[in-house]
Image 1: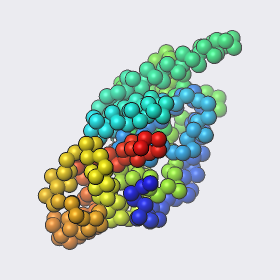
Image 2 (image 1 turned 135 degrees about the vertical axis):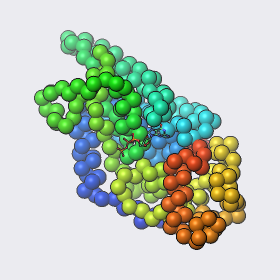
Image 3 (image 1 turned 180 degrees about the horizontal axis):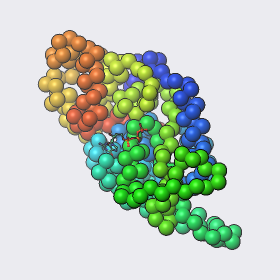
Length: 298
Ligand SMILES: Nc1nc2c(ncn2[C@@H]2O[C@H](COP(=O)(O)OP(=O)(O)OP(=O)(O)O)[C@@H](O)[C@H]2O)c(=O)[nH]1
């Protein structure tokens, strides 16, 4: 169960109109493709998965992309790879900013085309490139991944019957076509524990939330993970950065102590700074989820 549960963060609010629109758009994009590249955030690979996604995808193929692997330690990445393997999943880890891992994602997507064309051939149809779309929560790196996949290719637009004019196909190779716009997954509403982690990572789009509660939850998550899996976090990350030891403090207590220590007692400013520092990677490679927290791995 989540460490952030105590926070009763009903302060995180979404705009229902936006969610309905995002869901409709996503479903339209999914209708057009054979393969879905689902992008998640390596710091929160479970919370950046939407529980309804499988239902939306149906029997199309899915390639699981875990982006931002540079933001966690190599041993944390390995622990997650082992966990995914036990769930029968093959994650492709990428750093979409620098392009690492992207060729393997392309290869996996193209491999799906081989099966597609075998099925087409058996029905007497001509082969065609496999059609793919990149989807994920806000800010997980979808556009960065698309740009990496496109490289220097000129964006071609293909007018196809039934295709919304704003959706363009880009031919990546003889085997693969990609929709040039990513599909944004609407946020899941019920799970506040996941919502807090999404807010910490800034993967929450235009939701509104209380920075101080989110920052305090972030600090509590760090101290929990340091207690249960110190090997998966950088040592003394907070003390290193702020020269203030978090031992003996609750998240909220540390936030206030840090405000006194560095920001003239301004707790709001401290909360924002902490979150910004984390998002920019200044606190080191800190995950917010580790495999042992999720069922079947105790
Ligand atoms: N450190 C790091 N940063 C990344 C990585 N991939 C993307 N980013 C950065 O994360 C930010 C968001 O990336 P985008 O590609 O815009 O994310 P998106 O999912 O398209 O975002 P939305 O358009 O908000 O849905 C950008 O500043 C990227 O440079 C990565 O692998 N590592």
